[in-house]
Image (tube, rainbow, N blue to C red; front, side, top):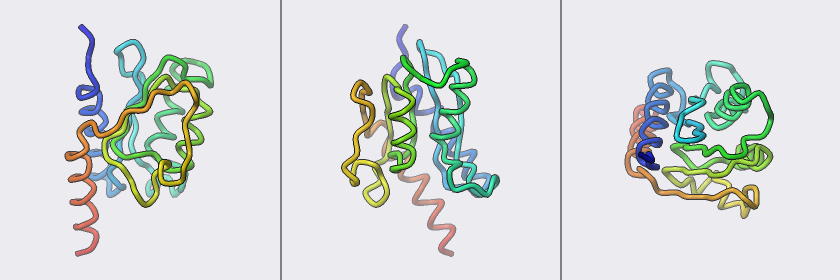
Length: 145
């Protein structure tokens, strides 16, 4: 049985919820190869005091360690928010088979900057966008109080 984007995005959303509980911006990611999750991550920028510790960067590193190589050919990244320019660059270098994201980021997402991922990377978005957006909106609403 082949699992679908919705199934894997649910796991990315669980990671985003972990981030929110840790007072991190709630973005979560998983890396999948052959229908199996090999890496899970969420934002750690506050905890690590590192602006590069985005969920995607953490997931790329964990997946590369798991595979014992720097390229993620054949892997798909599921992430709850459109990657930023920095993460898009790292995703392009990692040569992923696919990137699936939930919510778009019209202010800081890589698409608004006119960037493209690796030419062989398949891009899909909008999977569980409403759930991911709600998590982000709730997080920032609480911050504004």
